[in-house]
Image (spheres, one colour):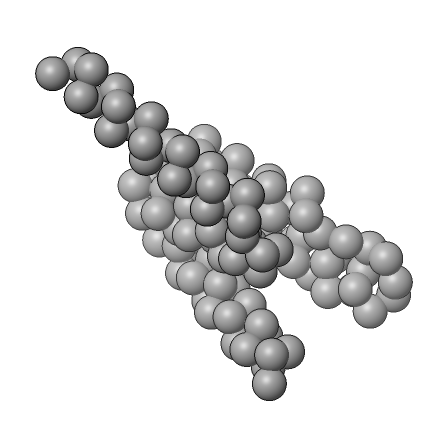
Length: 112
């Protein structure tokens, strides 16, 4: 039984690694949001805040326009991390879900 579970776990991990390695930057961003949202629902402060930190680390400050947007997102992400520390996971989940939906709309506009 243990060997079967190990095999299934290894196969699932291989699939996930392959999916991540072949994902576009847009899909990776959405996966981080998904991870953060799911863990906010589970009230897992550490995993949620770790995911939000990944989002913070991905912010860019290349030019004035990008820096302006990144600074606003940085403040929102910090607020979310603070709210998770205060166990206000519902507001974090709502904010992250709305941001995720906004990213999807932006990605769709770029494609069209």
